[in-house]
Amino acid sequence: MVSGQGKPYRFDPGTLCLELTTTGGPGAFARWEVLHEPSDLVTWAGRSRLPDGLDLTVSAGELERARTLRDAVLLLAADRAHGRPLRAPLLGVVNAAAAGPPLIARIEPDGTRAWAPGATGTHLLATVARDAIDLFTGPHADRVRECGAHNCHLLFVDTSRPGRRRWCAMEHCGNREKARAHRVRNAPGKT
Image (cartoon, rainbow, N blue to C red; front, side, top):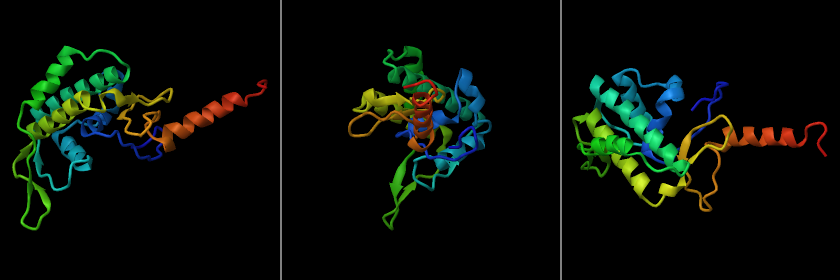
């Protein structure tokens, strides 16, 4: 990712479905939108945690469904992070996408992993939606977090052993927030 100041930093949200939420979103998140053309979704898939070699074809309709799924996952993850009930209409979006056929992995004669030919945006969305279902119903469902920085809303899965991760990335928001707290503590007039 790249900060508002243009500084690159590493952000790992912990799951494929939350990786998709970094591509934009509803409301105030629309300013971060990067999925404008079907090729943008193909580019995202190539940079995601999916193994390399996916030969993906995406239509304009599939791109629109990807943005709808992304928005639903983002709002559901925010609800989960803040202890709110999951909303039925958003769950319906995820469940509908998950009902489609997922990407199909296969093993090559040399023992390497590859993707079955003919992958489409629908296959990709089913795979992402099933990942979201696994997240929201699995052992880390209560570990979905929003970055603790005052102006960052990135969502991630806290897989740390104690379960106390607060920042999207320590080298970005963590350092910035700790420096901010230090300045406040040591401001003139404080004892």
